[in-house]
Length: 206
Image (cartoon, rainbow, N blue to C red; front, side):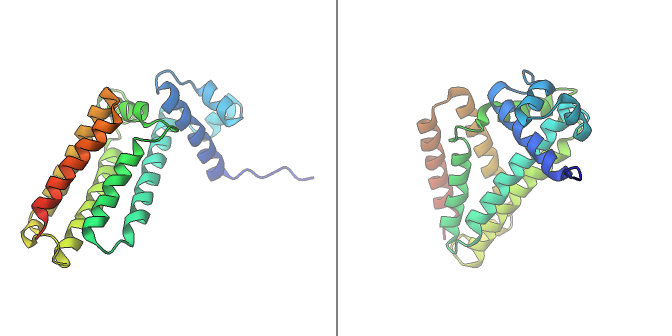
């Protein structure tokens, strides 16, 4: 019998998924390669056949996780004709991200920030990855806003500064999400977002 061929991409994804749940549960610093290997059902040496370091595992796992979120947001909002409802669907997805049990996003987002700004952190020299992710979110919001302008639902003058408006909205969401991660009061978090988004939509409506 010939030996079973291992799909490299599949194995990388298995390791990254196992690692993501450990990072979410224990945090980046408290998670070891040995624990990742055990969670993935493989030996420690096998992990190193696919990733040179825990840092690389973290980067890959977080990138996959965020890109999956982005793809789900695109899928959920793509076919909504009403721009207001499309924007609300995007916001609901943001809220849903922080209202799941597994993988718990609190430690993940805290670690992303720490590993981005801490010298020597996993994302410190890879900030372009984080910037690219944020740019993708921004493009999604810009597309929704311009769709609203073209359908004469949103004020035409917002088109001039649409990127700034999208960045401003995302910056607010970043801030309120960080507040929630610290306070862990989901209802307050949800109420604050709903309050801000209502004011935002009222401001841009024709």
